[in-house]
Structure formats: structure tokens, C-alpha cells
Image (cartoon, rainbow, N blue to C red; front, side, top):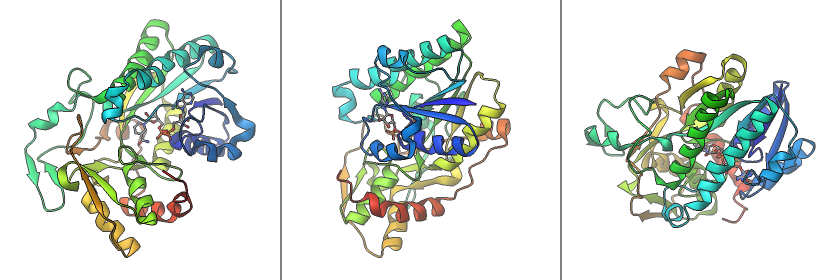
Length: 335
Ligand SMILES: NC(=O)c1ccc[n+]([C@@H]2O[C@H](COP(=O)([O-])OP(=O)(O)OC[C@H]3O[C@@H](n4cnc5c(N)ncnc54)[C@H](O)[C@@H]3O)[C@@H](O)[C@H]2O)c1
């Protein structure tokens, strides 16, 4: 199948491109190299790479047709100040640029796989769960994870990144219902694995590992490091996307995808793993909690597991071991 991946030099896009090429698909990656580190993937994809800034209609119009487009580019502004100070940047980059992707898909009769995020949900219902303050983590009593139905995209503060992704998510759905553009949407949680260039506000696990290599401080943003997040290895995500390419009817299904409860870990617990792995500690900087950043989030994969027989395979331990091994050369990239 001919597949075009937007943001194909980024962390998820490049891993996905390699995975799909390995399965025999004819893959093109399109990117504007805005993300630090994305240029490191250029050599691998040179004959399959097309420069394209998806904000520009003129760039998108020049792209060749394909059977499927995977909408994977984004400006990874999270819920911090930057998002609120310049909301127009991610709204334009992540939201409106998806309009260009959809018009391209409509013109070429292509299917759309949209990479969305759990940040599109109003996470206020999390406040209804009883919080249990354990020694190394905060727990929410009886919480089984974030999923559509239990959580809504209506209301609540999501941060500008979440809003920008919600614009894209809604546009993909609208183009399916209005114009029949076949689509599948995956709302994903935190992903980790090779080629991630993390920072404190996004890609926290890889940021931690790189900080250990550089013996630099790590940052806990609120909750004294007891906040809990799930991690999904990008390889597991690629396996799911490949299964969907084969088996989804692209009737605009919306999936919740992440590491889930069994791959949820607090920042303090992650630090303990890294203290052991490196044999030394690094200082911790504490910043105040961000807006729209709850103490516990992890995804509920049960629906997507039932639909595709897919479950994550890579354990947290394996993820951290791999991150430690892979981060050494990356630690030379200045942050
Ligand atoms: N990494 C995660 O944990 C995570 C979690 C939830 C959702 N997502 C979503 O997954 C997708 C991929 O994330 P990632 O972690 O690979 O990010 P990334 O920053 O590593 O990759 C994004 C790529 O998109 C490119 N890009 C950005 N704007 C562009 C534009 N206007 N035109 C062309 N290229 C552009 C960048 O240069 C980069 O190569 C994004 O849509 C993101 O919102 C990621």
C-alpha cells in the first residue's frame, strides 16, 4: 500500500515509517524539520522524503497521491505557559494544517489515520476519584483509565496543545461524516522509544534518561514527583497501527491507546529505577503544577484490545533499559 506519513521524520512518524516499510508498504515521509532532532532521520529516508510544511496549502498541493495518509505531525507545545502565550501557533500548526491534510485526502481518495491525544479529553472527572497518597505515588481509587464515554471532549481546561489537537480530531470526524473521507482516530497517551527528543514538559521519560547521562537536574512539575503516567513503547503503537491498516473499516472509529494501568509509573519511581541503573543520582528541580495537568493519567486500552486483539508487549523495565542504552549518543545534542 502507498502510505504518506506527515511529520514522518519525528519520533512516532519515523518509527512508524520504518515499521511499515519493513512490512512491505511503499512509504513516503513528509516533514518541515521544525522539530529538533528530526534532521537526524533524514539520511535514513532520503529517497522517501518530501519537504512539506502542512500549514502551507501550496506545499500540500505538490504532494503525490497515496492510498493512506497518517496525520502524525504536530508542534508539541504542552500545557505550560508557552501554549497560553501563543495559542495561535499550535492551533494553526496542529489544527488548521489538518484541514490541508484532509483536503489532500479528499482530492486523492486517500484514507486517513489520525494520531490524536488523550489531551483532547476534559480530565475534570478525575477529581471525582478518591486520591490515595502512597509513599511513591498518588493513586485514584477504582480508576481503570481514560476512555471515551467515561471522559468527554466537552468542557474543562485542556491546555492549548489539547485544544489544537481537538480541532484536528473534530475536523477528521467532520470530513468523514460530511464527505465520506475514510478515517480512524487514535487518542494516544505518552509514547516512548528510540528517537524521542524529550523535554520536561513532553517526553518526560527520555528527558530524564538524557539528564542522567549529562548529570543534569531532572524536573518534577508538581506533586513532588508522585504523579503517575503510563508509557507505551512506540513499537507496540506501530504494531497496532499496522493491524488497523489491515483490519479497520475506517468508519471513523475513535480508539483510546496507551500503556494502561500495568505500564503506569510515578516520576519518583522512575527516578529510583534510573538511580539504580546509573549508580548515581541527579538533583531534582521542583516546579509548580501546570494548568490542566492532573496527578494521575493512564489510558484504558480495553476497547482497542477487544477490536484488534492487540495489547502492549514491552514492559516498563524493558523501556527504561532501552532508553538508558539509546540515550548516550543523544546526550550530545544540546537542549
Ligand atoms: N509522543 C507522544 O508521547 C505523543 C502523545 C500523544 C500524541 N502524540 C501525537 O503524535 C504525533 C507525533 O508525535 P511525536 O512525538 O512523533 O512528535 P515529534 O515532535 O517527534 O514529531 C513531529 C514531527 O512533525 C514535524 N512537523 C511539525 N509541524 C509540521 C508541519 N507544519 N509540517 C510538516 N511537519 C511538521 C516535526 O518536524 C517533527 O518531525 C503528534 O501528532 C502528537 O500530537 C504524541
